[in-house]
Image (cartoon, rainbow, N blue to C red; front, side):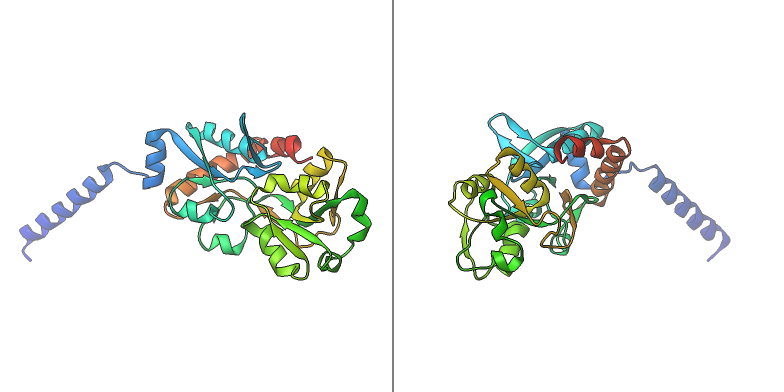
Length: 261
């Protein structure tokens, strides 16, 4: 290559580099869409107190307070999208919403197919039973008896626990998770497998109920987390920053004091 051609090639490379540096920087497609629409689509089953419950007045709960605070940090409004526990992951992957909230257990099965924000609200699996029967249920084996009527909601980790550990019991499915505690209290079932905070909520609300295994949960301690798709690293980075900012300002502590204590 002649000196002239060499200098021409260098000049072309430099021009290309300058053009690249000068080009506008775009975020990932999901973050771009949220930024342009000023809307964050939030999916939730809306049936799991105290994290997210849907009523005629709208949505409320621990996770609702947090996601609305995060939306304010992001400068967007929220559009709530109803979903269900059996369809939660499928709906996220089908792009029906941008983030899922409402008491979602962090586990490997979900993290294989989605991302999750940092864990909060440490919990274990417990049993919601009638207060009059509390002395009957001391061990997992006490629950796993042919005479015990267990009511579960479909989808999620509570159903998985029941199917794996209570095979000898009478197991029935009720579609609306929030209605099961009242069925237990009324004697239409004996046991509901749930998590620490939901059990505590219903025990406080209805003296007919008792939360068994609170001091020694049926499973190792785990945490809950907001679930997001894997399709946009820029979006994940920004949402994670909003969560960490909220935490650093005491937002998580305030939500826990309001809803979990």
